[in-house]
Length: 316
Image 1 (cartoon, rainbow, N blue to C red):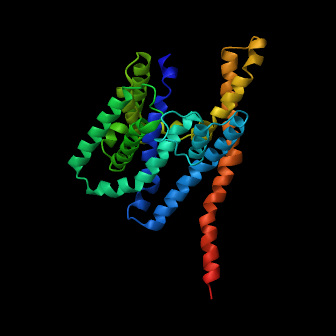
Image 2 (image 1 turned 120 degrees about the horizontal axis):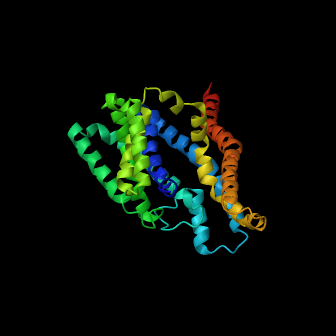
Image 3 (image 1 turned 90 degrees about the horizontal axis):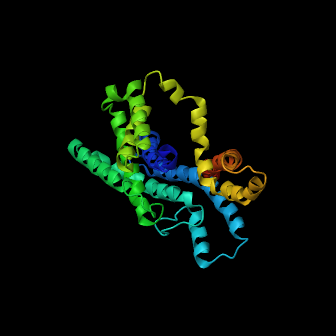
C-alpha cells in the first residue's frame, strides 16, 4: 500500500516542522543578535541531539567491533559521534537513519543567520523566495533516486524544507490566511488529499507541498480537532520520537539476528514484523528515559553551574 511504502516522506515533514518549532521557541530570543542567547541556543541544540546520538554510535561501535573495521568505517564512526556524516559520505554504513540528524546540525548552524536576514526581505521578495523554495522542494522530491540520504544531495533535500518551515512560522505568527487554516474542514481535507495522493501513486513533489499545508492546518486549528491534536499521548510520542528514530538500527540488527528462531517456529511474516516494531519502540523508549532525558538535564545544567562558580570566585 502506498501509504506505508512511502513513509520516508515523514522526513520531509520533519525538516519543515523543525524550522517551524525552532522559530517558535527561539525566534524572539535570537532576533536581536545577542551572543549570549546564541551560545545558549547552540548548547541547547547539542544537548538535544548528542546524548542519544553518541550512545547509539557507541553501541554500534561495540557491534561492529566483532568484525574487522576498515579505514572508511573508522572515519565514519568518528563522523557519527559528531553527527556530521553528510555531506562527507555519499552512503552511510553506520546508522543510516542518522543522515537526517546530520542535516539538522547544519540547519541549526544556519538558523540564526536566516533569522537575521529575514527582516531585510520585503514582502514581495519573501513571496518570491518562498515560491522558489517550494518549486525546488517539489522538483527535488520528484526525484527519489538512491543517494538522497547522503552527500550534498541530502542537504539539497533538507535545508530548503527547513527554511520553508521558518517562513511558515512567520505566516502563522502574522495570521496569514488564518480564517482558512483554523477550520477542521481544512485539516480534514488536507489529510484526506495526502492519503488519496499516496493511494493513487501521485509523485512525491505535490505530496511534500501538501505536507506543508498539513503543518499549517494542524498548528492553526482552533476547532474540535484542536483537543486531540494536543492530547498528552501525542505529545509523549513526539518526545520519544527522536530516541526511537536514532536508535532504531540497533534493535533492527538484533531482530534480524534472532529471525531464525521465528522461522523455525513458523512465526515469520507478520509475527516477525510485529516483534521487530515492538522491539524498536521499547528500545527507543528505554533510551529516551534512561539515556536521553537524564543526560540532557545534566548537560543543560552545566552552564548555570559554571556561571555560579564564576560568581562565587569573583565575589569579594
